[in-house]
Length: 542
Ligand code: ADP
Ligand code: MG
Image (cartoon, rainbow, N blue to C red; front, top):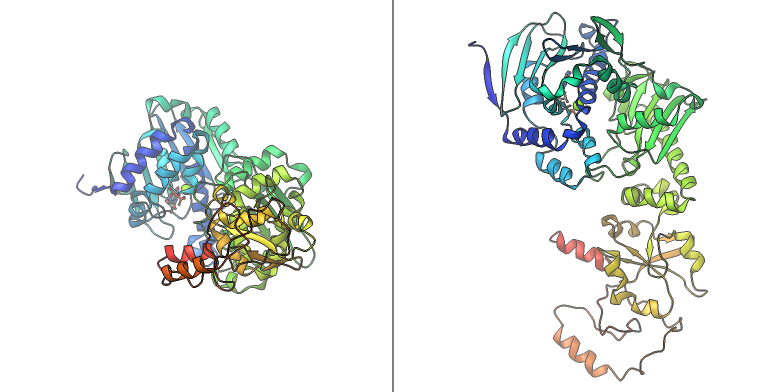
């Protein structure tokens, strides 16, 4: 009809659709998780809005409904949520807001096949997974608080249409016209299995239509409210996968209830592996805040950003249900919860660090993020220092600062570190020759943050932490353990000539005891940036 508007997808969306449909084909069932999660989010958003605007009030029996129709070969997912106005349909379903396809396709290329599905959730492109199973998708939506409804429709081939529609109540229907090879998703039993697996802990009830009858699809329990003893490991894992959009097993599960001055329940997870969307990119903690089970926001900053890899839920009694954004920022309750939760996570890490092999897995994935806390968080700096692990010039594997200190030479005063881009290269660096020759251990640091934090954590157990590129450390206190080369000839003439030749490039040229096999090395002044920091500053064009 004349009122149907045609629009092209942005070029980005076109390519993305292609990627999602082809790369994730083996895990097609997750389309249902994504659509049910969107529906539940929409219900949560309407419920939250209704706290301040009664016109948005939800019907008492609000639920997400999944309705397969074999004869018509359609699968419909309906929710009484916040809905989308016309421009929101175009914006949310026709463009990619957050992360571009480039980052997504790069991550897809890097991911193992079994890891790929979790990318959909991480990149916020869940809706498009519908095109894995459907060759046409129609979304009819009426925004809560409005009488207008619109239908967005697309075959996933470069364009979509928008047409006026009608819907008795606010909310959204997503109608999938299933592909011939996706008919299994019209079987009620198959759908039930998928929903149980993926959506059991969504707090909005989900129902399935089976033989014309509506049956419960999920139990709708808030898992974190159950006592620990009643939750199985499988349930924890499934819940973790749901909140974290992950496919692995959690490395740590923390489930506890705080009582007394502060009342809250927390169920938190440390992921088993690094997510693809670099944790470095996401800046803030996404731990979800609930008040008496009801989802409020995932932007409350319940953990400091250097613990942003931790996933999960905190549910409290100590805030009113109608808590507003402004109030969240002002209330001391959140700050106190944050402090308690941070302490708990740190003490769990401390306990788990005693198992060196298992801790290494964690450290490799999240150590660089944790180290940001050394720079940012004076209050927790010492706790974090105890959790650090390093590569070393003398021992294999990972070592802690405490272990390093226990191996220090009797007359050794400082903890020696060398910072660069790559630990293997650092091991061969001329910088450590003199130290190795004297049996002095040097910690080798190669994460990006390593250039920064030593400025703030400048000692451990009273031992200064010193970059060996800074100033010519006096090594005369230590006996070389290897036979020394012939006593050096008089270098005065050579030094004078070198100084002349390099006068615009270096501030001084000195003889050093720090070299064994190499002839020369670069050294930084004792105060000011060390060599790695100078390199970073140069790269940044300063
Ligand atoms: P994400 O959920 O990560 O934002 P999606 O691709 O799954 O990414 O969804 C895109 C957006 O479309 C959502 O953020 C939301 O604004 C909107 N949306 C999707 N489904 C619904 C729905 N059932 N009701 C209301 N809005 C929806
Ligand atoms: Mg989504």
